[in-house]
Image 1 (tube, rainbow, N blue to C red):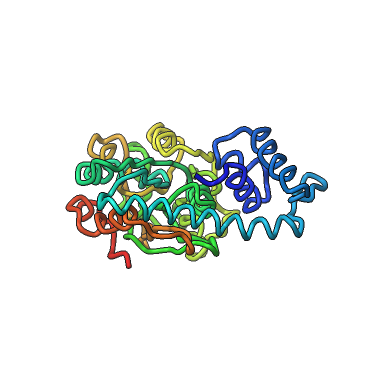
Image 2 (cartoon, rainbow, N blue to C red; image 1 turned 45 degrees about the vertical axis):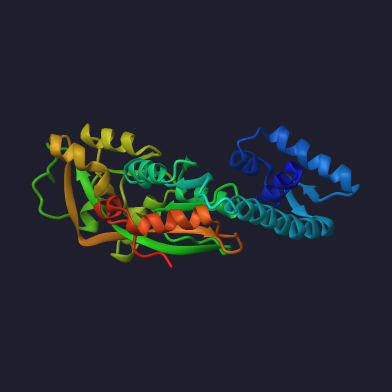
Length: 307
């Protein structure tokens, strides 16, 4: 309901990048530029300074950003509260999730939630943790479930559960019969890594550093943004990888991959993120309550109680 120009301006101002804003809004960069230009013409002033490929807010832009945030928040609250007058839980729930959660945990949970509340429409965006954080901070998503603690100053983070990561190798690897794998063994073998910005990669890198392995010592032979591609490369004997144990259950049962526990164990917290200032609608609260009570949640060990 809020002016589209204001929504686009808000995203550009938060990212200080027309390119990143276009990606988050699923728009072309010229379309984003056009919307901002229209708003500048409306106010008859520049909202951004453009210099050497970078942008910054002008004093007018700073003022506009402050009002834009308040307007967008009030619009969201108004829509939610008016819809709640009917007593029904309805409307779109915009959820973002990093790939492990989206592919292996959320589909059945969202299906069950839809059965309980038929008037809702869950819309799931799948991206790495960094992208999900940015989308939640820019109000293009209501909440996110990510694979690492949030570093964004404007987001509230709630711990959902713990997920164990394991090293995987091919059945014919010299590591296949090992009972456990040390950080040093991971570093010494050809290693297939996730891409930069991945919560899984951040977690693994921190784990190796904390256990005395300098990242320059890790024999990275590939960086892949697809978990399925990583599993395929490992199964072909191209190297080892560290992944969530949840994601390789089928391959281990079929004998395509060997999963080896890490020593010391590597467990990470999966977290829920949402904006500090965002009004918590009845729909969003219903989804959080559902996560606490659904039998499927216990199956996935997701989540701990969300306050």
